[in-house]
Amino acid sequence: MNPLAVSAYTVTSAIGHGLVAHLHALEHARSGLRHNDFSSAPLDCWIGRVDGIEDRPLPTAFARWECRNDRLAWLGLNQDGFLERVRAARDRYGAKRVALLLGTSTSSIGATEESYRRLDADGGLPDDMLWPPVHAPHSLSAFVAEALGIEGPCLTVSTACSSSAKVFANAERLMRLGLVDAAVVGGVDTLCDSVLFGFNALELVSPEPCRPFDASRNGISIGEAAGFALLERADVAPHAPRLLGYGEASDAHHMSTPHPEGLGAELALRDALLRAGLDASQVDYINLHGTASQKNDEVEAALVSRSFPASTRASSTKGFTGHTLGAAGIVEAVIALLAIEHDLIPGNLGGDTPDAVCGAQFAWRNEKQRVNVALSNSFGFGGNNACLAFARAGFSG
Image (tube, rainbow, N blue to C red):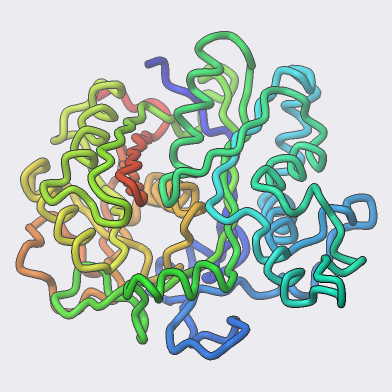
C-alpha cells in the first residue's frame, strides 16, 4: 500500500495525559495501575484509572453528550495540539472530506449502568438520564464528530480489543478509494462495572498488578484510555511517521480464547508485513498484545519466537496502562510511534520471571536503540486480530 502520514497523535491513560507524560512514564518504568477504587461493589483487583475525569464536565455546548466516556474523549482531543491539527485539516480539505473512525468496546455503557441503578418508581430511567444519543453504541463517534465539526464518513468499530487498531485499516481503504482526503482514527473506553465484573466472571482478572509474559501471571488488569491520530497523504506531512501497512484476520476459534496455534494472529501479522513490503528481519520493535492471561501470552510469545530474529525487540506495555480494551489498539500504536520518535524500547513491565516460551526477542527492561520500524499487535475476543506496521519518515528498507 502507499504509506500514510501519521501527522498528529495523542493519548491519555493511567500513566498520564498526553505524549510527554507517557514518554516519561515509559522511560522511568512507572506503572499507572492502582488497587481498584472504581467499581460500585468491592472487587479485589488492580485497574488503570485516568485521573481528572470526574473534575472535567463537558462544555455546555456538548452537555447532551455528558458521560464518562465522552469526557475522556474530550480530554484526549484537547492535548498535544491535536484539536488544532484536525481543525487545520478540516479547513484544508473541507469537513465532508475528513473521515472519523473510532473503536470502542463499551461506548457509554457506564452511563446506562448508572441509569438502571436509579430507575424510578415506574421502572423507567430517571429524568436526568433520558439521553437517547448517549445510551447507544455509536455515542462516542457521534459526539466526537460534533466536537470536531467534521462531516465525512463516520464509523464506530467494535471488534473487542482490536477495535482501535482496525480503524487504521478502515481509514486507509477510504483514502485509497478517494472517498476522503484525511481521517481521524482512535478509540476510547472507560471503566465500568460491566467490564470489571464481566471479565472477573470469566476468571481473567488478576487480584494483583498484571504481569505480562511472566511465568506466574494470573490475569489482566483492566484500564481506560483515549487516543487519536490524524492520517493524511504522505506528501502532505513529509517528516511525520508513516503507517506502512496493516493486517487483519478473524479466526473465530472461540468466544474468549485465542486459537491454540495463533492462526488468526499469524495471518494478521503476515498480512501486515506483506502489505508494508517488509521482511520480519526489518522489524525493530513489536508492541505485543500481551494481556497477562495464560493463553494469550503463550500463543503470542510462540508466534514471536518462530517469526522474528533475536535482533527484533518485543514487549507488552499493559503493565503500564492496564488492558484498555477497545482503546488498546490506539494506545499501543501511539507507544509504537513514541518508540520510533525517541529510539526507546519499552521494557516488559511486570515480567520479572520470564515464561519459558518467551524467546530472545523479549525486552524485559528498557533499551535504547534506533527504531525504524515498529509493529503493534491487537488481538480481540472472537479471534478479531489486527497488526499495524509503522516506520519513521524516510525509511526505505
